Length: 231
Image 1 (spheres, helix red, strand yellow):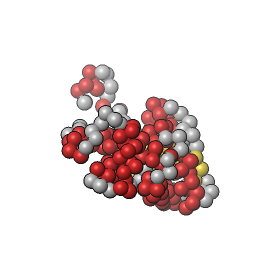
Image 2 (cartoon, one colour):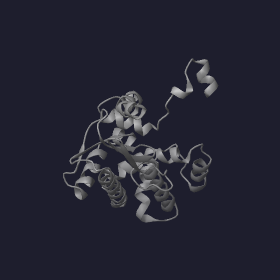
Image 3 (cartoon, one colour):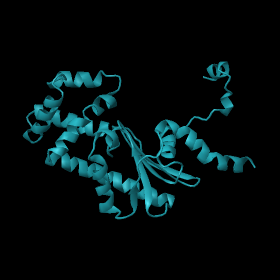
């Protein structure tokens, strides 16, 4: 990488590499303090208050039960497999899966082979998330229970991070990722979960800037601190 940058005339020591959520927070809140919830294939919560920052989650779909495509897809996968093994309580999930993905494997061996032979099991599971969203829309008791559990954990993480950072109320937050973008009901469901635990504390804000401007906005946000450190 250093050699490639040098050929481009870029001094490596002047290049700053940051996690995507730093740029997303800067773009989403236009450099202001607050919280960012990333809920796409994976999930992570990140917050900033002045020079302090912190995060919750981001553990990956194996461990993180907060809302993400991979987690909801994992729930769907388990429900479909148990239905194929005779569980009548999740048969409606298997029916939805067959309805939405008639070209995907419809029996256990090929389903598991497709999942475990894929380059990214997390992405493969994430593709099943629309089945979960549809089950919620159709008032599936199974889906509603799973969603309530996941959103309660997410709301606790949001509230505890806001408290840890000492953010002033109301705490502004924004969200990015496929669940916010592709599931129209997700934002209202998430806000309802927050209100049930922290009424009036966390306030939604639509992302202010395009995410591709995030790294530049992050640099402008942190520039005063960098100058003060050098002085």
